[in-house]
Length: 336
Image (tube, rainbow, N blue to C red):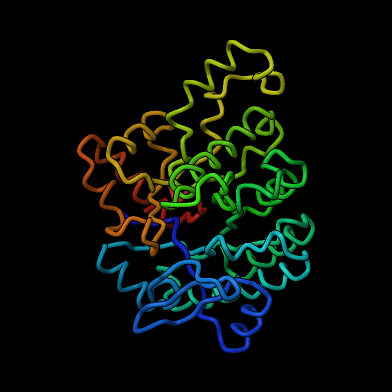
């Protein structure tokens, strides 16, 4: 069995020229702060302390070896998205970061794979960069879950998702720019409360708008962090759909009928939570995702799934690798 961690992040170390420009312009960059340690900066503001595996592929491979992970998918740290920037500037930045991701994966191309970022604020540029990135070796794209007040049912974003289906790109939807930050000034509450809510909102925007009726069934879509609060709240949504016509006005079928249209990862950090996600979505729709190498990620990658005492061996094999091989269209791994 090939064990695949399909949700991890990278951030390339900034050279002096990029660091100076980013600090001046209020953009994200990475500063080394000590041996094996760094700080993600946004302009001159400290954003997040990080460790060397974020930018050093050799350190990352050491982490994978220690956790017995055969393959890992890297993608941008969401602060890198740049959706509020001028589209052409964001496109140039995405190209640079995507090329750096391929370079990082090239350290060990059997074990490191990459998902690209795109300038989502311009659908034409986003489609073009997704196609270019796929041609350079990316297996798909990672996108933020919204674009300002536009969620995934926005026609521009549906156009992009359709393009991803057409070019065979896997899509990871990651929450970012969380709601109601002004009400959550402490304790990392935006990450603990708003992040799961953002993902729930994203999934429901596709279901209740009827977007899944229009999107190609070939679209390989995944939502991070176990789908946020979706699994726990699906019963509430089903009841509302059955009882209120204003809920189902654009959604012709029960919300639960669309569960085969997307995957979620396993980054839920609790055996009971993981069991709920598997019970609701099915063992074919959950994939190992660690959020490595961040402090809020799974430090012992794969341990939650591997030591779970209520999952069968067959279910574990699917979650630890088989499902991700299908999502990423890695036919040789899926067949192994």
